[in-house]
Length: 130
Image 1 (cartoon, rainbow, N blue to C red):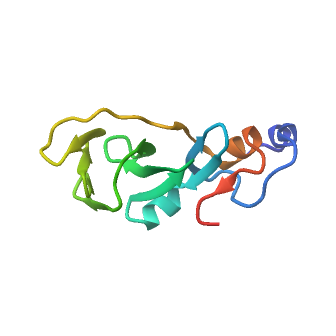
Image 2: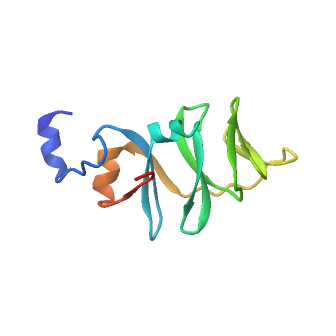
Image 3: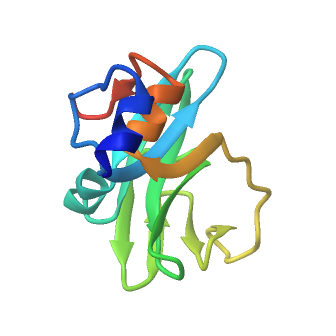
């Protein structure tokens, strides 16, 4: 990053590398960052809780970018290009029930971003896994 640009960013949150990419989620009470490398370490998908709701964090196979989706599942597993849940799956970015029928989807507020951008927008954010 250019030093002239870096000085305009204010105080840097050094808990993560400045240029790291990941998924940032936020709600009225939560701000959380999911490093892309950590999502990959979990096989490309993981479950977490956001304000008491289960949220699936996964790497979309078509775009190779992370995304989040509220689900009602206790387990997640990636198989080929599909994300298998105990009550259905996510295929090509679409939430399906066990019979393969499309289900309504609800997504939390999210952004694919570099760490420095999320940290500056939401100072003191949680970091998944830390």
